[in-house]
Structure formats: structure tokens, C-alpha cells
Image 1 (cartoon, rainbow, N blue to C red):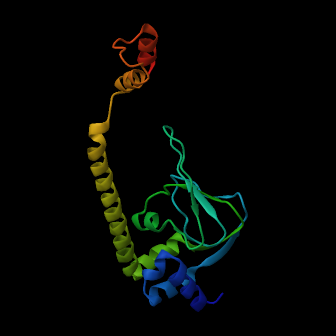
Image 2 (cartoon, helix red, strand yellow; image 1 turned 60 degrees about the horizontal axis):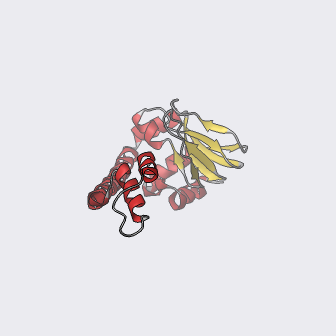
Image 3 (cartoon, rainbow, N blue to C red; image 1 turned 180 degrees about the vertical axis):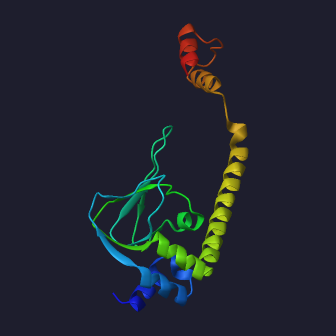
Length: 189
């Protein structure tokens, strides 16, 4: 694939499409094509990324392990760009990445990408704008959830009270006392 074709593909299928043609051309000239077999670990979390990865074809899965909760996996499709933020901020990879099928991955070695970032400050500016947009979206989502919780708060009932309410609903009319069996059920709720 020629550099011009790579630039067109990057513009059409990746978040890098916001960059100017000159920057994309410089990135495309540094791309190394790497075929990766199914069920291979591409990246391990909490390790420094060795390259910028662009998924050209195939499917990847990323996940983060945690001792206190289950790992949530996200499937990645062609056009996904991995480690852009980590390489710019010089941070370790946040998630483990595995191949779900045979993949063609375009890689730009970390050193080459660092040189491109120095040569083209537009890369940092574009990623900063994308991160700011993501932060705005998350802030709006958090505000919505807080409003929702505030609106639903009057309907919350303690667990014990819910159990008693359920038992009282099932009682025959005119029965004002809870029998010992119903009290035991309410206590377990």
C-alpha cells in the first residue's frame, strides 16, 4: 500500500483524520505493517507502550484487570488507534490488548512517534482537543446521573422497610399485626 493510500485510509477510518495531510503523510511514512495471529497478547497493562498501534483489519479486545472487580472487556474494530495518549504523556499502557482474530496492525515505533510529535506540534494539540471533548462528555454524563439520583432519592426505602412493606402488602385485609413468620421473613430481607 502506497503512502497516499495509507493517508486516505487514516483520514477516513481513524481519529487521526483530524490531522493535516502533511502530518498524516509523515505518520504514514513511519508505518510498519505487522500481521498478528489470533489469540495473541499485543500489549500488557502497566507496561510502557513500544509503539502506536493502528488496527487495519481484524478484531482486538482490550481489558483492565482489577483485584476488586471483574475486568470489563471492550472489542476494538478496524480504525482503532492504541496508545496515542500514553505515548504523548509518557505513561504506561492502561489496558491489556489481545487479538480476537487474525489482524493486520500498523505500528509506528515509539521513538519515531516521539520525533513526529516534536516535529509536528499539531499532533499534541489535536489529541488535547479530543481529550477535552471526552472530558466534557463524561462531565455531562456525570451531571445527568447525579440529577437522576437526586430525582429518585425520595423513592428509596431501606432494605428492611422494603421487606416489611412487601409482607404487609401480602396480608389479608383487616389484619393489623404481623405474625411471627412474617416478622422472620421481614428480618431476612
